[in-house]
Image (cartoon, rainbow, N blue to C red; front, side, top):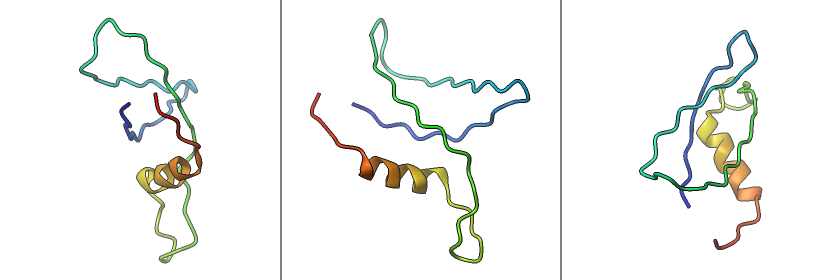
Length: 67
């Protein structure tokens, strides 16, 4: 299993396009996507929470299983 952290932009058409390079070919994948607008947090004088910080918190709350 591989975790990839991305930050992307949704265009005016409302579609999110992701191009994710992998070392895999001809392989079925199960893909999980969480979407969350990036907002300002109340800490550090309105320092913006990075996607990586948010993602780490989200992953900590997800039950893990061995694949």
